[in-house]
Image 1 (cartoon, helix red, strand yellow):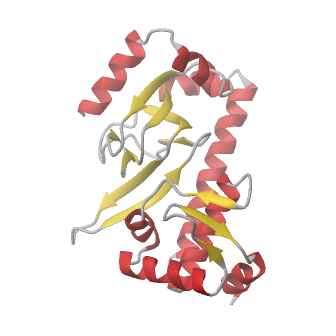
Image 2 (cartoon, rainbow, N blue to C red):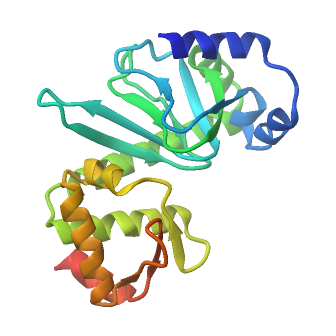
Length: 225
């Protein structure tokens, strides 16, 4: 609840700044939103908090997650620059959201956004597209969770490549533990699978966070069995 109070205060009193001007360049959503910064691992909203706002990432990355009854963390989604998150079917959040690294977001009151989208076609289209993307990622995530460990890791890398790559390399903002909690695997299994994929020439690992897809045909073969 503290985070939501901070967000409310920022929306009421935000000053015009370089960050503000940069955020407002992010399309119709950005034109009516308030820019905010979140430090690495800081909470943006918590499970069961009122779902009063929607968020668009300007820079950085965000994870949503739930803590299961046995204490394990299940990450539901990763959000990257340009993504909109915070959508809920009900009035409260069913998961928590945290900044993976230092992250800048645009924050918009959900009720005000819905009213404005009713008579601004560009904004309505942006929200529709974001909702469709959310559904697609949810469906793809469900499909990954029934695959083998190797297929899950390769599928995850394909997803990140599709969303982030402008060249041959993927810069992963998330840790191996984050990836494990997203794929429903142990960190040992994820690390071992990365090593095996590197040894077989499917990927190259210049650093622990930088991945190069070397043999996309082999990646596709792994995914289709």
